[in-house]
Image (cartoon, rainbow, N blue to C red):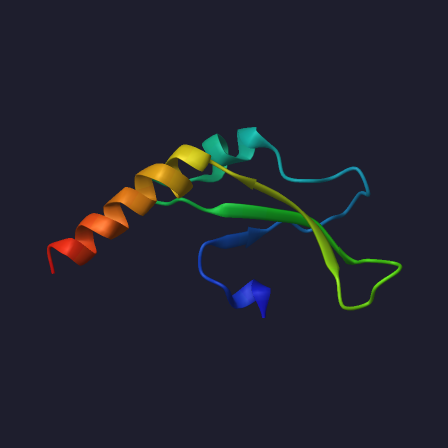
Length: 77
């Protein structure tokens, strides 16, 4: 279900040391995009209902700036 969620980009883990980094946001992000990179996705060993993941996002673009834009769009519709 998460892989189909818009805005998430999953990093395939070929090596146990691979996980998303901040530099990927700068390198792999197109203008107008605010992706959230997800890596190291696996189930918790003690609770099969819990998933553990490493998440990297630009908090300014994805958080404050995008949220402000979305609020403005709703106000002016």
